[in-house]
Image (cartoon, rainbow over all chains, first blue to last red; front, side):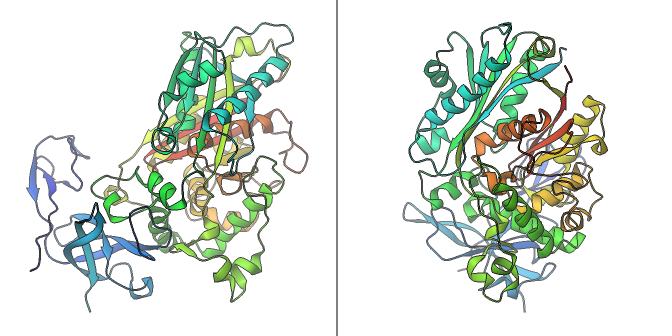
Length: 118
Length: 401
């Protein structure tokens, strides 16, 4: 079953600025009251990379990671489900999902993944 | 506020130093800086060291050692000097210098020792990469496996698309800095690169594989062990010494959002611009007055981007300037004549201090001709923490006796 994307973004009640991750004060107007919001719809890819020198905790050859902007303007980092960066282009549409991104202490850690939309 | 000068500078060779503990490296560099200051003190006017600031990012994680500054004053018999360890990621070195600067400028202390050091090679590359990645956002970035080279890769892609930076521009930085590294006895990497072997040849991908697309292996600085130190006192006191004092004429520091995605324009390194502008304003100098600069080139793209953000070149021109030789020794503005982080290496806590040591040597005109910027009077350093979310800049000025 498809899991809900467990990311919460925060819209400043004073000026409307959308934040992810959380800040105690708005990056623009310093307001302290936020409306919680969920990333909505598909996203478009802002930038990406393929990392071949992985940090401790990743037992694989490489990782492809990018930052994407959702239809409601939430921006977030995620792993990208492709075999090569040759399959990617900035600006392309990607579909988000909430899937295992790493294993820690024998347990799956869930996070954002993006997959290009044909 | 009192004017503050650097009166002692010392460094140990960077690289893989299996034979030394972190504390030994810090002590060796500190003794070199203290001896340098003492040599200059022919009239015996220098007071004892009032305080010691030690820059270190990973002692707690990599060596399981904390309270490092307290341990160093003991080792150096500097008691009862005050002592603090400063941790500010890869900008720890410049942050420690800032603390020394402010302490003397305020008049509270008269003589301060600043030491930066890191021992990164005793863990595997896997662990060292993870250690450096712990400075990324703990929920929004770190769990995904992002690394600092990965951040730089994403930044480079945007910079290439928006400003036309090419791999050829990045290559110009690698070739220049590694060539300079061969002349620097303190450099971790003393190996000139062969353009054909890492770029032109169809087999170059074997020698220079992609590490964080679009960055390749030789776009990245090495992971290093090393330490560097300086001694600071008031300019008034420094003028009584035999070596030309190097005045800290300007200082600036600025921060930015932790994640790149929350910056209005992720290619805009605002913290670099603001830190440099503050340093130039305090020194009453402009980028055109600078004769030599040490910029934080942990990745080749950063030397290009920083050379633009500090004001040496307009945005989009830094790569072309490097390719045209304008940043080489003898060029319009020599950048990273030491070899930079790219060749000297990047023991994270040491880097910000090492940059100042190299500029002090330049401004005292103490380097061999093949590394010396002739007649250099003013220098700039930029120490870049996180991915540009905490940046410090210093403008140094030679004071004629």
